[in-house]
Image 1 (cartoon, chains in turn brown, cyan):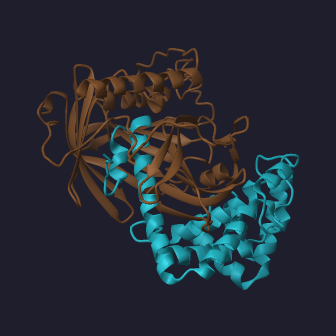
Image 2 (cartoon, rainbow over the protein chains, first blue to last red):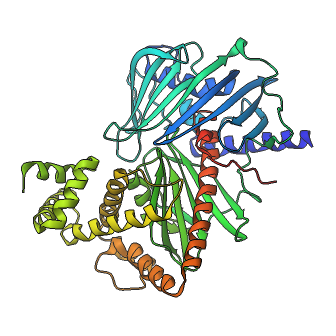
Length: 339
Length: 195
């Protein structure tokens, strides 16, 4: 069974990689090794989480809500093993194992610059970073997080469809130790921060072992709900903010009503959002709720002849979600415009 | 109208208004039509700059009232997903204003009729971009009129559960397709793995 799971995971990796590669052919390799270059730190962040061992306590502060979790990440024989322990409320422990480190998903692919038009597409061209109107990177100063020296990096959006990120990256490993999401008024919507962390040789190699009989086991690639499976969508977005690409699409069977929900997931490497669509017989008045930087915007739409409930969830401003739902169309050959 | 209020309106047009500025606009809009008129002038000017039409027909007072109504409704309905205070008002107003205009942004006049036809409004609407929202209210009112409070509470509970599921799916997507490792999973409450 374990072998089957590993094979399944590897197959999904291949498919995911192929999907990204197909959307972004002919990668242009860029050499980013200069610590004075902001993109160097972005790239190290993306690879650091995947390639290194770490064991830390993370605290997430979202408005009045504060939560903590322990994250253990180990790499053995080219495969990632991860153990997540939610430390507040009902104790939950999740094991995710056997994910090949060379399996690069959409966001990583964009960040690592392996995709033409990706975030790092312009890196190395005379030091001029051409993020094609997506973000401007700005190196800040140095400080400490969890008693470790960090480099501050600001990722500043070039349009109003995404938020600003202030990243505090471990100087030794590149691992993101603290993250702040800010709106256009520089208000911090959400902070995630390791308050204690061991990296590399400091990590107990047994730390990722199962600690409880109640631990939940999950494949890296499995989306959470029953009968989650790739499927064709009956709708599409005729507009995406510049630089976003579809990372995956799925169908989920929701247990409560035994209904199928279609989802599509998008990323520009930094910002992510998901769109969920299900049939409905009665339209509920549109509304939006927000926790921290995560928005859920719910609106009824008539797609073709069917009323659908459409929900956009993501770390995006409301105007992005509204514009996305404004541009939902039935699948009928609508070319996606990016502006 | 004070210069400060004009600047606040201008900031709202640029989606840069603070909570305080939005609240000031809300207050002034409820007391005087001058704010609405000024907003229309700004809108018309912006529309002209962007070669868009119909801005002048948007009624900010209706948008404001709707935002306030929505905030009150959401505040009553939600537990852990309560909107964050004044931000909800700002977001709501922005949503209404943006919603009322986004149908015009990026969609040329020649495309608008097709979009309208596709939306197939249930009721006649003078504002194309408000079609869905207005239809939603029409349908919702019809349904709510025939439901009792128990049904409504059950619907809201179901909605909250569904949103929780969506947010969990999204967090997992973010941990897989983002660049910040498992950090997005810290946003998940009541983590579930379906077997």
